[in-house]
Amino acid sequence: SIIFTSISSSPDDDSSEKARILFLGTPDVAATSLKTIYEQSQSPDSQYEVVGVVTQPPKRRKRRGKEIPSPVGLVAEELGIYTLCPEKARDADFLDELENDVRPDLCITAAYGQYLPKRFLALPKFGTLNIHPSLLPRWRGASPVQRSLEAGDNPVGVSVLFTVSKMDAGPIVAQESLEIDENEQATTLLPTLFDIGTKSLIDALPKVIKGDITMDTATVQDESLVAEASMIDSSEGQLWPTKMSAQECHNRVRGFSMWPGTFLYFQVGDDESNDPVKVKVVETRVLDETAEPTNVIEIGPKKKDGLRLVCSDGSVLEMLKVQPATRNVMDAKSFVNGLQGNSVRWLSGLDE
Image (tube, rainbow, N blue to C red; front, top):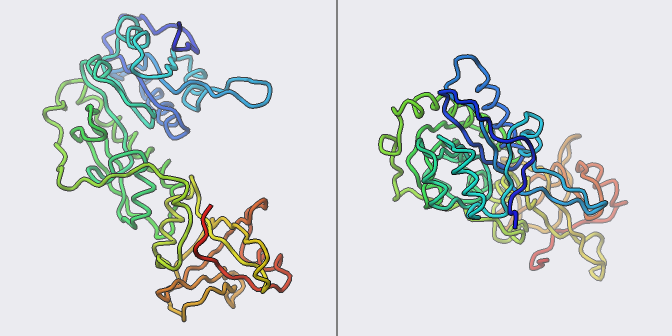
């Protein structure tokens, strides 16, 4: 049975001396990287060409059953690049296709989303390079940007490294650090880091193709400094002001802005028989003040102030934008207006 789909034409058979690059990626940030690398490959003095793309299989729309390619798949189609969408990167037919027809000299991965088997890693003579949005060896794993923001890291950064069988453990080719604003969220930071990482990778490509940078000459990671960026569970999105400081809550809001988001349960009004309201916390900041711990939430005195939540340690989190269940995102003033004079308290001890 066919386990991959071909979205465009066959791989380029032009027998030029340019290094043959295979790009692997799936989401929007990777699509931007692909476009940048492809554009660079079109310059007259480029030493490489993009001969193929690998991405996750198209997703089927619920309505009408139409298949929609991944963002990388759409860009590859737009650029006319030969594209493969294997269910699994270990599929024998897919690996045969790479070995016999695509014949990559170098592979580049950017948020592809699948584990690459040893047979794949053995194919390209120059190896496989990966763009990873953290300052490795800190934050190896599935959620590096989310975990770095959750931990309050500053600076953050991006690494370009050779891929080995062990996740994110290969030697580092290039690394860039970035100082960020204390309110920066994952939604804006992730594409920024991929843009920086793509530029670093492009800068390194001539040396990799020439053989000046290899698996043996790149910088080995210090295993004693490893921190694991474990996959996020949706239950982690709940904020616990009884256990967390305002800074810890704020950092989780920043880190989880893309997915799964962060939330609290509110009690609206004094009638405790009212059902709790689940409220997504969209944008926050930490106030440089302390207050007597309380579960009462009130809006600040100034015009653009947010909802003030006092944690058990007395630190104060200001919620600037929230989203009650079934409603749109709104600022604090709009939320208070909707209360019609009712008080609001945050609740602890509840989960989904």
